Image (cartoon, rainbow, N blue to C red; front, side, top):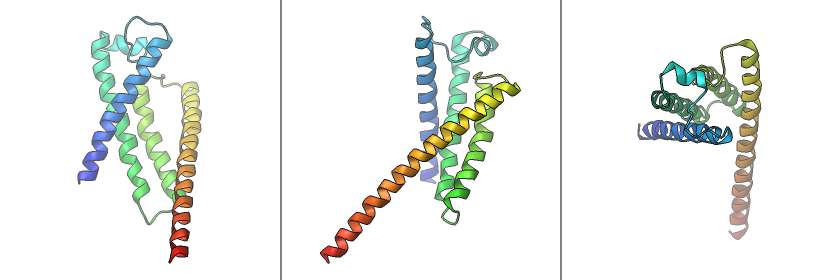
Length: 153
């Protein structure tokens, strides 16, 4: 239970941090003199930036929860890596997509959905590749240490 609570807290804090930092960078990129949590249309729905930021924090936290809690799929020892990856991809895509739409990142239109899906798949494959490479390097190091230990005995 403690690990689940930790995952929840990491998801909330991480999602909020990354959401805020991305919005902050975008605000700077567009040379705004104020913080813009999302698109103009999103902010207008809530009357002002403060209300829009408060709603954004909730959405960013939920996004963090999606990715943090869905990663527990990789702890299922009876599943192969391919099944874990496919299930994780489906869960994160299905839960993240509506949150991204709610956050005002893109409208619910076919051309935007296609672009979003392509970007999501690309980023997912890239992150999966980095994780796979890291795991492979860790396994290589463990095998080297085991071989060194065997030779020493």
